[in-house]
Length: 234
Image 1 (cartoon, rainbow, N blue to C red):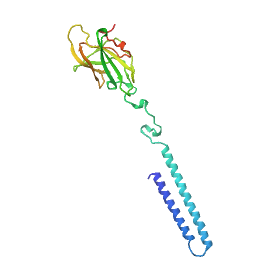
Image 2 (image 1 turned 60 degrees about the vertical axis):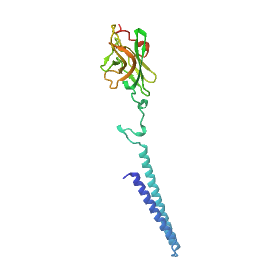
Image 3 (image 1 turned 120 degrees about the vertical axis):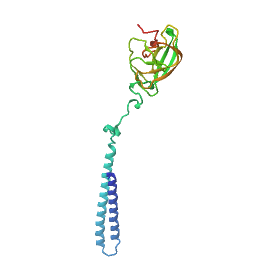
């Protein structure tokens, strides 16, 4: 049985006992036996019994209060034995993607056509609101069409990891057609992923582009550094 509930029962019982003693005292004082000294003696005895019962009830209530206070001040234990009264929030409020490698579904992408270096697509990526994540060093995974025409590297070296949060933007340059001859396949969107194992790649609108042996740069923090040129740099 719950200790607090038991203490309450005892308190009620002691209060009832004190009431019974008090009633007996009143009866004794009101009897017409003519014995003033006996009535006085009975009254004194009854008063002592009443005081004793009241003292016991007060002590019981104090003990119960201490037990309840001790129980509530300790907090409840959660997983791992941590007290609920001393828990701390995870950094960033536990928001999705905090401190982790970015996935395509953590980001908002856009692409626009640029005329520099014979023309290319500038792909931009930002973290979604409330997300903080890191683009790992390495080549973005870019492909076109259902058959997955993949873009190969436009740079010889791998760039640094980039932390994305708020308005911070990462850029990658894509040359969709590196061949000189006519031909290629026309597409209006590309598929962007972070690495080859990204489970949720994103579809990004590009407008109409002709694709044949596409190349892509690493991620950069400045758009001027993401110009792909017409082939692998030297």
